[in-house]
Image (tube, rainbow, N blue to C red; front, side, top):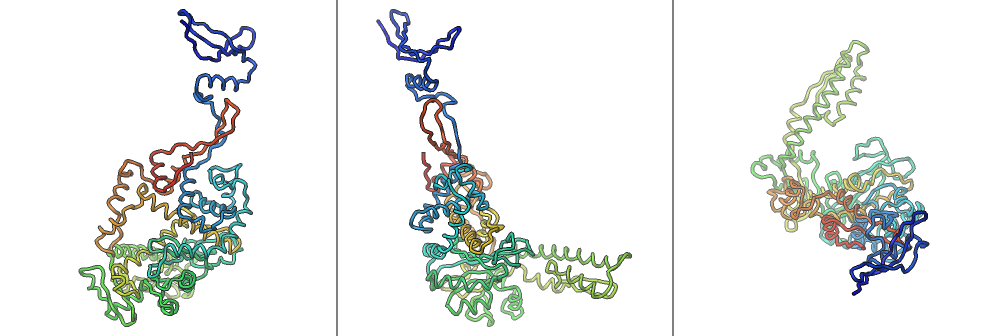
Length: 582
């Protein structure tokens, strides 16, 4: 009885020459193992011999060997797929241009790169090129052969399309009668060649530097819709007329409620820009206006004995509703800050007193002393709270406790002003609408510092600066939606409706839902996944890589294979409705 085994490759050592590589067949006969040689493979290339051996064993060539494949390149892919997939699910690429083109692909890459790794345009180009790419972005958008001139040409192509894109966003997110949030911020400029850059008020603590201003229009949830760039010395109120024109003419909105802060929607702007075109508004009174209300008796502090919100009326504000609020936590914060600033001012004034009393080269002369006092006393805007006496050889000061006490009475009090009727918005809803401006401030923080890093600006041409800021707005539009979708596995509150219900008063600080507090405490979701910030989650997704593999055992083309996502990564991709290519 014979039993034939399959063919196999055997290496037979030779004493004085190289080993013989033989193709053999084996079988068992009468209890003995017999074999015979079918072919001598000694002269075959090693790769060919290993391939044949693998085939005879019934397994893919080299699949059981650590060195079966050579990884020629490995590119981070998961975070790229997540952002590109989100951008396309929002149909933003079609808003850029309905037809696919290289310029559209470049703009798409710039938006995605601003979210993934905000860098200069030159560094972004370097990351897209075939010879230097570290992620799959350049490959996904077929931009592996690109230079900075291509990027600048694409930016020049995008800017004339800004109005059309913003109109499409407004049509999607703004309707007649809706709330529209508007605010202005600034960022510093590196260089001296841009016509938009000017010495102006810095909101970044960079006083004395060239500034560029830009204003952001958002819907009531803080989703960006339009952005406009202004010269760095433009005041906040001076930008309102352009936004009114944009809402009425470009977006075809006849009835909206414009929400802006007290420094933006001043009485002059309400009178000259909003009332003539019939736009409603929600803003707040300045501190001096609140003091006049108290002096006229229209606002009495006893209103807040049992409640923190009251509607008041004053003839100085006809056809307006005034909603006065008092926040005890805000009052304590302002009291503490004022005491700190008073103490800091006194330190400066003490130095002047010491300078007038020193023996060596004392500070003398009424003019010289007054000049020094004028410079230092108001450094922290506290000069109004001090009384001083200056002679040719001395300087004394004291606090004006009466003025300090009068100001302290209004600590924590703010007054919302609006033209919207009570039938449309209640007092509580009006306050909530004004407080929603915090969403625009979050947008500015994200665009300027946290994620997108719009600053500092290096572009020389004004239109390039405008396009750069527009790109950052589009990137924030994508990120805003991604954050909302990913909220269940981020530290962000994914149950804001519950947080609103448990809030005792709209005047009180906002609260986080119990689910958000649970995530913050346990650092885990309900199903045991780790909770991330948006930035660390993108970093985690970047560990999904797409290596280029080259088989070493056989002469076959290279291929790519995406690594399998972890449970957390798959959850993130599912929330974004993104599927990875195999």
